[in-house]
Image (tube, rainbow, N blue to C red; front, side, top):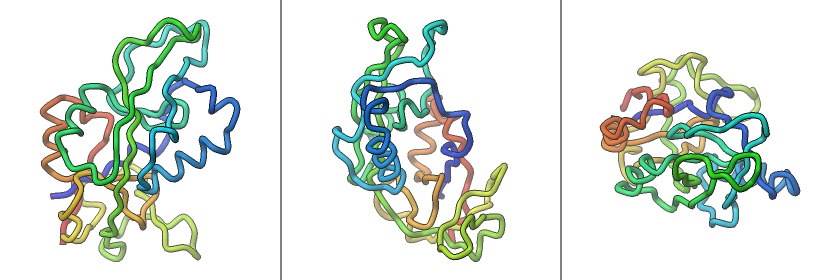
Amino acid sequence: MIWISDAMVGTAALKGFHSDRWDNDLKFTADANTRNVRGEPLTADFFPSEVFADYKDKNEKKQPDFFMAAGAWTVSAVCAAVLREFDLGDGNLYPVKLFQHDRTTPVEGEYFCLNFGAQKTGVLTEQSPRITKPYPNYAIWQPPGAMQDKDIAVSASALDGPDIWIDTQMRHAFFVSDPLAQALRAAKVSRPFKLRKCIVL
């Protein structure tokens, strides 16, 4: 079995943090995020090592197990521990410190930036009737709104290789193997991933 996540869609996973690099070089940060969600292997230099809360009048609590902070997809320590037990391909986890707006008080928890770092081409677009194609002249698709189980069909060849990956035909989505999905569930960190079952053909 293969699972798809559309947690990248919408604003629910976006949290109010910024980094010095985000403030000073927005182009670099945007490029790093674009390359990451394409599944490119990236070094720690492409991710922030410290991020700071946007609002001085808000005390940031412990963050979700999967979210975006300062342009980087980020996971909790518990989630990172699960991911380390699986094949990330050329992906990696890089520590990042979260601080309140004062830049001194830490946010509760331990966090890591997630570099996806693995690509596969397995989505069967013709067998995925609810999949959407935002640009008519480009062979790029994205998950349907309110995605449900079995909306996306994937070739069985995608079962081989890394346990978490980006499909080269898809944007705003990533895929995980069934063993990884079950491990995330067992650790009670799967909810923000919004995982849906794929049809494997």
